[in-house]
Length: 241
Image 1 (tube, one colour):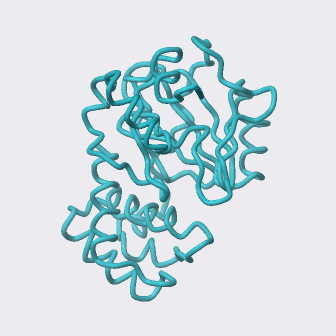
Image 2: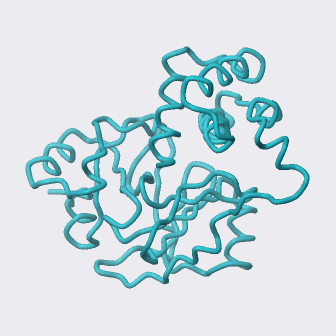
Image 3: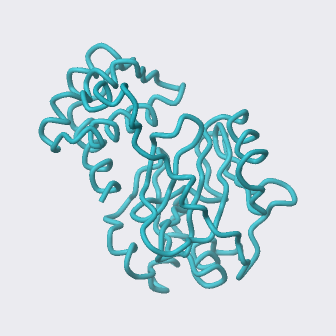
């Protein structure tokens, strides 16, 4: 019988887990797993169904993850920030695993070279598969049971710009006008990033959805459906709390 990764991450690493679909979307309402771990029946059923694995980041798992979407950005982080002993190869880049430092670590998509997955966030974990691509640990950087990870540095979280460009950032629609979402080229993540920028600009969810609809007509190829845009906004505002 193959190892149940849901059970292994929960029991051996202390991580909170839940199932992920083939397009990286939670298959269940996963908010409760930010506060409690899945039970034996759940992890057994998810494994038997062949679902992909999601790990809840933040205090529940004592885990923070740096998500570099490009290999060159991962090399920059490895050389200039921290040499984490646990690296995961994703579809396009690298995840760096760190121990949660305590306090609040917000999710962030505002750094030019990486995203932060902290409290209220999640990551896809090995051995999840999407099409022909499987998430896997990089050689010599595998995760071991009860491994003591280096502590995440809260200074890695981007801080609001205090220069003259903040006026443009506050104008959320103007700011995201530079983003393009192309199917097969990271369009899903770029659309989520646009939703997060609207959230961070101070818009409420209704105004953000209207702004994202306007952006969608000109900057998404092909355009998303209204239901898909609404999901992106809900996801961005939920993860930003």
